[in-house]
Length: 268
Image (cartoon, rainbow, N blue to C red; front, side, top):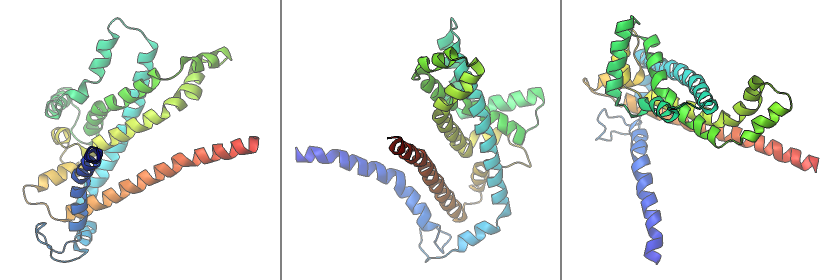
């Protein structure tokens, strides 16, 4: 029995090792003096200095951040409205329509990239940031749509009905009742869309322009000439920024609970 109880801990340890040991190695070798990741040449901040002198890399990072923000915001609006609209109508083929709405998640990215390239060429949309925003928004919408739809299914319809009985219009019910309740799902979907946009290479390669290069595409193109530990330094900084944002989100999530607890005490 004792050996059996240790199996979950062993499995968890292996899982955590597979997930975080590569990240830990990237962080360690970002401080490596040597250009070769297989050789430890001593502690150094050389690659951080090289990173902050690389304007082209930071320009690519800025393009990726702008693209991820615009596409996640657009996907948040369209996905939320789509999920809300689907919850209010009853179509004969509603299941098929919802399935089609999630197809971009299941279609291989290389096919999506070729489709977007052919479509933009056909309608005359120039390749660049505009085409990237449209393409990334299209494949990010299903992530917001699915999460918001699941939240709407689990929401008590009596809340909206009670608001309408009290005289609220449908628009006010949406903004005052429905939207606050589905806000966590919207935020989760937008964060997932942001991560997917930041990570995309294949679709971006097909629709990016000559003067617009995202960070993943730039790193991918550098594989031909060799990636320096400068990329390790950049990954370390992005990982630190991610941890900082997660920590701030956790603190902001706890703050309302503490305020509500204080109000409950004063009310009593």
